Length: 357
Image (tube, rainbow, N blue to C red; front, side, top):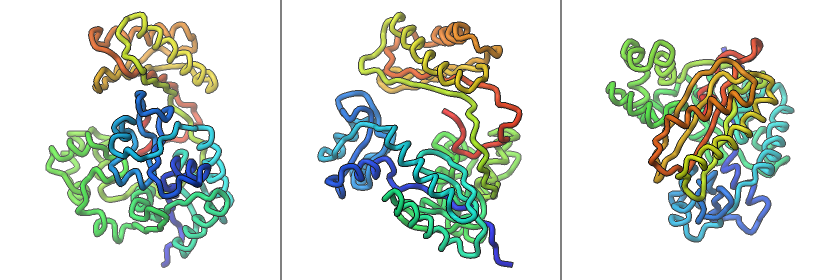
């Protein structure tokens, strides 16, 4: 019987850079880098880079000063979150009005679309045209019989393309590729898998379940094996996502070296985070302090706390985490995350990109 239920993963091409180029047509075809306040002399990282900039080796998360060195002729622009949010909203609204579409938003620039159709490629092309007509933005679409396969398929369709990955061709396409190319497997996990002798997707699909459980635990071990096979949920869920926590972070143009500076910085971060949490109407049950020492070493400190909505108590607990930091190392970045309990009616489970900070 012909399959009629499909998962499509829609991913906007070079989204942030594309929005900027639409606003500045003279930038078409030029290397464009977006990050921080657009000043490579300041401490900031690349939010996104146009395909032309990527040819110089510029990538997201790279320090802006290094990106400017790699692509000296690039146009560097400041982040304009409001403009990107507006463009994203228009894209998601376009997806929601497609015939029979169930839309699960993953972020500014990507979403799953669940649909019943006998011709998913034609449906995908229809989505691309609808998004282009309304927003002048291009997107790629991955087609799959699971969320994982659809998400991975999109990479083969970029830019502006459509690609299908199913159980039938999963290992043929992905089997010889390194595990880090899987959705949800980063550099740390891929190294741990390599320690088990698992370096390719096919090897992960066939890995000893007991070895994976021993390394990653009874929940994540089987989950990584499932990723290797491309298996998992095929249900696109449009239930609104409920945040487990809120976080803020700041990169400082001058290193923080004095205890008074650090305390003031943590208090300021806590004030912003607590404003975000207050809007949720749920207490704080855990805190995470992220510290990046100069030149570029990152540490994370966490603690659980009794549920509380008392701002003073949360700030006090956050400052207790400061005591675990190395007092003699200059600090270039601080971040604070507040964890909240999930409401009883929140959606259970989450997809790999929902992993948090």
